[in-house]
Image (cartoon, rainbow, N blue to C red; front, side, top):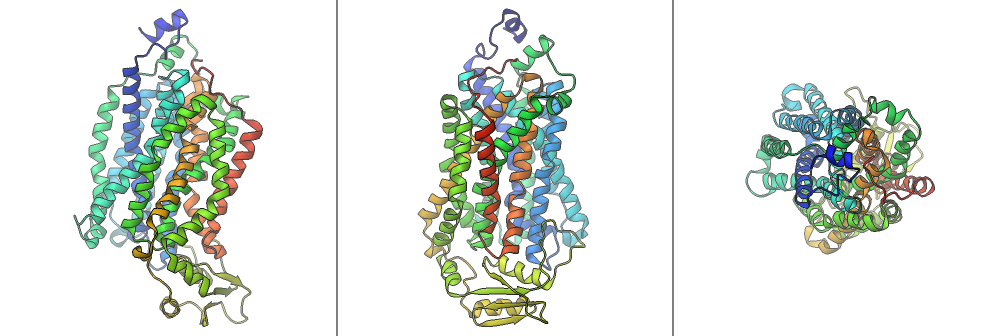
Length: 541
């Protein structure tokens, strides 16, 4: 029976869809989205590694910040992709819109594998890389809203949270897949570290072309959303989705509330539990890359089923209370959890910081977020960058007259900045340059990572159904995509960059956690005051 026939009889189009058809829709939508997240996270996982490939090597922390800025650029552009593709999705349809997004995403990722490095073509290399990252971000901005809307518009009201939760697993599965492919290339003995640095890093990007072909083939077999077909047959479609979404009350109010009272907090909790935890292990705690990837992968495998659980639970008790509970618990526990990571992953570093006091006295320190070719790094910046890159906290003290920067490591006083002198001072004071895997309490590290992963599933598992239910069919794709991608792309995607800069400026390796904590608390307050549960409503309007 067609959507038009059902609409004419006043029936529910979702109730009439066979369960086998719904499972096919969920599988096909999720598979394509896994691939797109895999594409996007390849760069995110390799961001510290890309710092040496595509940016100048004179200042390691500056190169890392530039790599994170390029990583963030793909997130910053996602809301614009949401606007462009959301409008097309509401005018033309869900199916063909996310066919376009997956093609743009796939070819952009493949092209990254063909890029020359900074050593070959200079500043043209990061310019090309940023261009491709922007294309990826635009495509992803249209992909998620299309997939979530498409699945929700095939689901019955009492199963919407459960079935859209499968879409929510795709970001984590794509992240895990990227870790797996990189791990095979980098750590399995297939190639040496030198080979991976020279050309092997390209393989995960080039392999994505195979995944692209398979995903497009699967999606071509899907039909248009029955809810969208019903809306079109009744002549209820919007002629101007952007105007109706963002310039007309009360929908514009719900767009803003969805952002500040749900997706902003969800975004920072998600990226703290997955990406920032990984960067903290490898960059700050000096855990071996292969071991860190393995620990994160284990926590992902343990935590992923909870996406489905919390999606299912949201069908029974509501989406909002689960999302806000995740924000609250995360905000209350991030500091002790990350302190626990230090204690269990690198106890020697923790002991060193207790025994050796480090201070920096300087006059001209700057707070750097975005790094450009003309960015000027002072002696203070270089000193703080060096200590931050070493995973060390330090105290900022008043400047010494006549000295641009004076750093004290234990009893050793260093005038100005000289990397070799700083290395020698750290070595002499007993600094552990690498985490000792034999001294690591691996079960406790996995437990902490899994706890943070559970927070991710709490805030992310129900979010698709929650956003779908806020907006009418005629502008649903546009309206839900923008707050989602601002929350995740701007609030969440900026987290590694802002947190790294905050740590370097403050001298406290945990100081960057204030960013996700403050955003999560903001979301909790706004969500409690201004949003209400909505999980029992029909979306066929």
